[in-house]
Length: 128
Image 1 (spheres, rainbow, N blue to C red):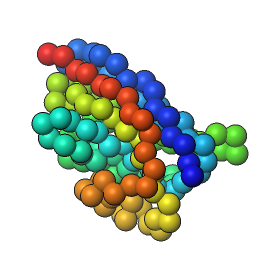
Image 2 (image 1 turned 90 degrees about the vertical axis):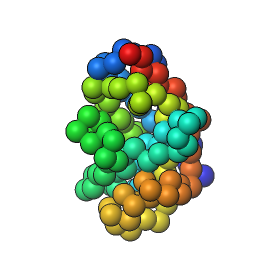
Image 3 (image 1 turned 180 degrees about the vertical axis):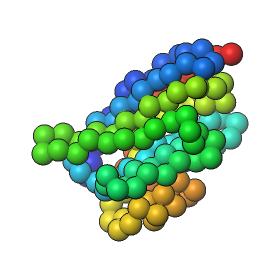
Image 4 (image 1 turned 45 degrees about the vertical axis):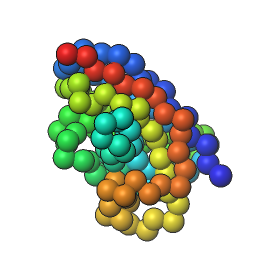
């Protein structure tokens, strides 16, 4: 079992920036950020497989950057969000899935959001 804890959410104005952090209790290769919007449901935002592969939804490509830190001492996942828009508002979750062998297979999980472990979420609100 891996624990995931998100932080860094908040309220910003249209065009602002936020950086989300997910602290993990262990290493897992396939990690992602997923957001939940009440009117639209769950949307995969960005995925990272080891340090070799990243993938983004079309709605955030060019504005968001996913990165990760994997050392003997700590494991973390980050999401740098720039040029934020009101439609980026939602609850952002860090998610993980074991036993994914390739980057593209991890990226494909953004469509199904079929992840094994989830954090508690952090709220992002963007006002116009």
